Amino acid sequence: MKKYGGAHRVKNVTGMAQISIDLKPNRSVSDVYINQRMDLTELAKYIEKKKKAGEGVTYFHAFLAAIGKTVYNRPKLNYFVANRHIWEHDKIVLSFVAKVSFDDHSEEMMVMIPIEKNDTIYTIGEKVSKKVESFRKKHAGGVDKKGANSAIDILGKMPNLIRVPLVGFLKWTDEKGLLPASLAEDNLYYSTMIVSNLGSIGCGAIHHNITDFGNSSSLLTMGEIEDHEVIKDGKKEIRKICEWGMNFDERIADGYYFAKSAKVLQYLLSNPELLEEPASQKLDLGELR
Image (cartoon, rainbow, N blue to C red; front, side):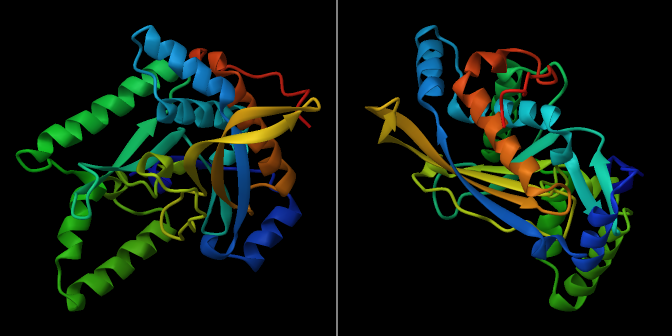
């Protein structure tokens, strides 16, 4: 069994960080909110260029690639708090919910995308496409679910008398790092970060609370991409702007760390060619203050 789905404990934690955990032992009351207007003008040009070249690069692929590269360069974003200690995921995994179709009764499935060291926007895009396409094809004959996706269907249909205490027991095993590996598989709450591209359904960005269950300490949502008039170098310009809603567990890092991480993300989205380089390649962050 992998502890907390695969993680190792962070040592040499500062006294301030430890006390903050003792004062706020629950993740659900420790999340902080950042609202960020991301400039996607250069990314829009990049995607249009790739489209003309016949390459299937999408905004969502770019978002995941930029987030993954940001986490490699800002490793505390891969931390989480469990059992009053700070841990680091052994891998960087981004998760999201996929729907078969955009209607009220469409089936949903949790999708996990591991970001490997050598991944680029192209390989990440391939992973996303394969997972989602496989899910939608299987739905025609009934979705072949496994891991947490399967467990949710089974648990959800049990009567209260059985389901409530069983879920309570699973929450206890989760807290102690003893949750069966099969239930951590394909479980978006066992990921580095949960991501939701709400712009794809014509919705603005929201701030969605993070939960005590699992070990995901961050949740990012992206809204619609819109044209905005901005003043740049004293001149009016029309820029492609997208609202991002970001939730972080404040116990894993301080506000400065989160703010700079948002700047790293913007830097990557403004220089999308960098997403064609390995995710783990270090960036020169000296100019980002």
